[in-house]
Length: 418
Image (cartoon, rainbow, N blue to C red; front, side, top):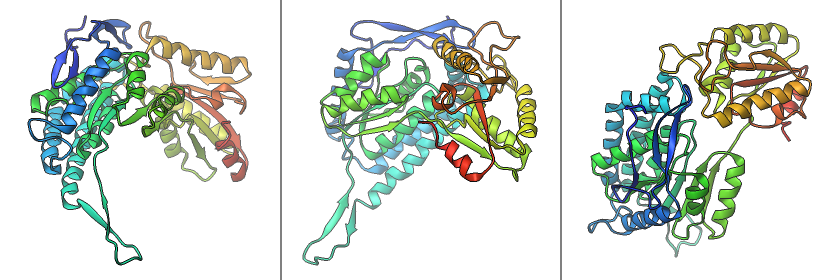
């Protein structure tokens, strides 16, 4: 067990609360494959308790409900949360790295961005006080029309594992600024810093029930949240397959849903490009966070006249990427999140090779790392548009390459993932 990882419970109604069924999930450090702790595994029973707490906070909290409080009142808490994130930045970054395998300096940057996000929405919360009603001009002068912005109610925020705290904050901060109360359900693969966010909210005195953090499996927490009749809105970031399930469940109670799902983004390099600059951004776009980003530019389209020279530059860049223990100074490529994801990525690579693609660089485990879910930065050529490596989101450090001769052909290939 890693002494750095705190042992937490569910955070409901401003208090730590043991799951009703007392279930827990092991926390695995993907860079070492060691179990470093465990986290509470909620079920539908805990979801009901958390939703009740959020509803109570939305409508009444010691005579001053969160929804009708001024934006300035809410901003005070958002700024306090931001300040404490910065105070704990070093510890939070280490926890994020242990939990996800991402390089420590990337995790530090994520913590700084999380604090900035809370500060940004604190300003927007205060701005709500200045424009309670926005007049709307209409032709019939006998009527006066205004737009009044009001919080929607209790929101469920279901977030992924690639940027655990930052992606959570992108949902939590605007929800709280608007006067909503929230239940945050982080990924079971990376919940540590979200539970620490709960502790920060407790320490700054955020009113009871305004933010609840309920960890656990998607089928046991995300599903009952999505279909819960007293949840007023769902915001989900994750895979397309899970997004379909979330939207289907939410449709049963006709609640609005925001979805941010998978991607398969192209990067186009034309013959007049600055090749050194283009190579750097291609490498960054595909291999940052081990390629575990929905906007990763995992499909390279390069003009055939410069393709050979450009690929040489990409290989040189890839050879110089430091792959190591993510806690080590200078690490640029850490592990992927889990054994399941590791095997999925390797299967994509093996399948592409079997379909006739060429592994130009990488394609497996780095020779100097015998433990952890590490995959070399991988460049694959001779890729056909019907191959799964071209069509499907790999969510790993894998770049597939095709050449083009005209701009029209490039645009056609860029849009060809169907």
